Length: 200
Image 1 (cartoon, rainbow, N blue to C red):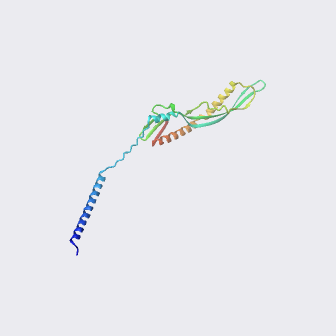
Image 2: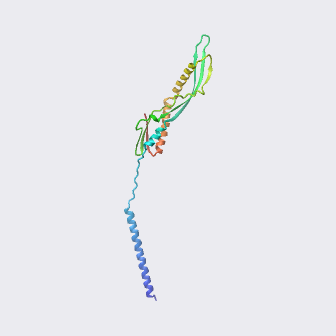
Image 3: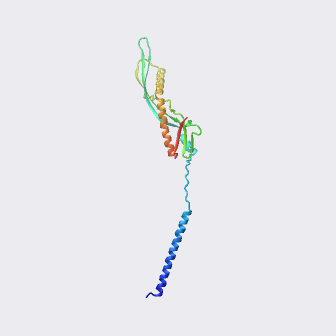
């Protein structure tokens, strides 16, 4: 036969269990209600700020070489004589560097808006007009007596011929293509998704 104390103990345990379940239920509902009412918002800022200091750092690079064109010219001159002709034939070597000078950019050359940027670059040019390597210049054939002035005239002739071969439409287009690739990569690395490049 079950004792009254045992029945009271069972009833208290049952009440404690029910109260515990009710408390857990209330806690779960309270947490659920709190989560439901809490809104989590993520604001996306797609604006990329490029500072005046960064723009100045790009300008401070100065000359940017996008293409180098090596050339070699065999140049000759002849001086007519009474009994014989004098000949001077020399070989000249040079490397023309095509690119831009960032000191020539115009105000507002870099315009950023959101994740887009417009870059306006100066025209492709020859970065150094003193491109003939005189240390490598050598005489191929020489007969007669030639003055320093004669040699200078031959040098200038070689210079003009190299310019004709180096500053071609194709080479300028290739230098532009290389320059655009470089600036695209640089602007993308700064976070810009849309990059437009135009030339002065």
